[in-house]
Length: 569
Image 1 (cartoon, rainbow, N blue to C red):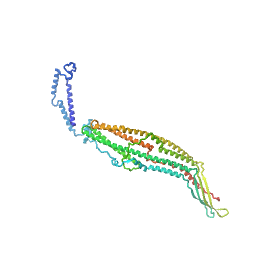
Image 2: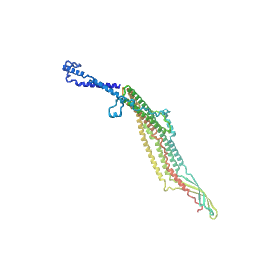
Image 3: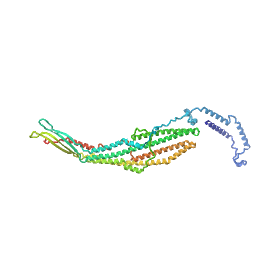
Image 4: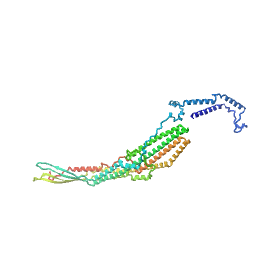
């Protein structure tokens, strides 16, 4: 068919060339176009030649007949050209263009362009798209509640937060306990022989904490336990937020996988249609090649979407404390986004955030620590009593002094060390904690307001995608596809409408994902980071420990005092 078309085109070209050669021999100067000077000529009738014109025409006709010899006439030259072209086509039918011929000539190989599916000129292999989720999608879908139950039951940070609270409560219990008494043996001037002297016996020593310092120390740890109790609620919200964020991100990735799979099927159908139209002569090689390119790109995008789902599911499983969970589909509705009042949600974050409540609890703990440090200069009472036996002989009689009792008491005078440094540090801690409350309020405002605006923007976008953009794009794609199948539209128009529809579908999913992300963070007071380490919030080197050490040192010093003998030395 292509050879007959080429022969027809060359025949037309030859006839056109022969007609052009006849035109210069025509005498156009003797023709008068003034209809008023030719009364015998009627409108629409060809003019009749005069005697002189008849002779001229007869001469030209004779000349034409004389040139009609074979090989010299236009028809003969056209026939020779056709035969030469057909021979050239037969000689080049089985030849392929080479790189050398392309480099030597800028002319395109028409045969290669029109025979893109020639096996000898094949452009690539049609490898199938990788199916990375074929086995996973056959498992039972997992809902959000299951992931949350796993996370709340086994997340290590929740155990850390509970341990921090327990630690503070036990320290409060310990701080209220009084010092233990000391029981010991004391001996002095122990001699034997004829002198029979020396004293030895036992004593009991007790430190009596004055000024209510034990209760104040206990209050410090109780306030810290309250802060850690709020920290448990705060960490639970962090864990829930991380699980929800990972779940809806993975759910959106699952929708993208399905969307890419459908796009891949459409691209494969377009390739089939292009081949069918090419066989009917209604599509060119570029249309077929472009359809194949779109199919290969769809395979790449489909593989990338599956990889993204695998990556997102792994993060979700880690957040739920299930690192070995096999990849499975998710059960959920991405379009059922909570309907939030943005202003009310921001106000709730600023008023009820656990982060703010914990900052306020830290202020209470700092104030309790300051009150305790102010009371620490009150000295503790050191009391010691005991019995011992004295072997010293009484004057005038040869008899030992015998058993004696003794007792002593003392306090430390706060002359130079009145706990000034610890009190000043505690006062600075109060100022820091109060400033942290203001900082927390501003930080929450800084985070909540953009989330609210982003939520409203994503909600508006999702609504417009769903009600306005997607219906129009789907209808446009359907119409272009129908027209293309009816050979009333070009393939680039179908391709453009397909890309537009896919871009809008991806935009709709991203808008839903953003809407869910912002809603989850607002509902969880902007908290996240469920796997970050949890600190107890307790200062292990705070004043209660220091003052306890100082008191014990004072008590140890009292043990070095020895009682005086009733008889003297």
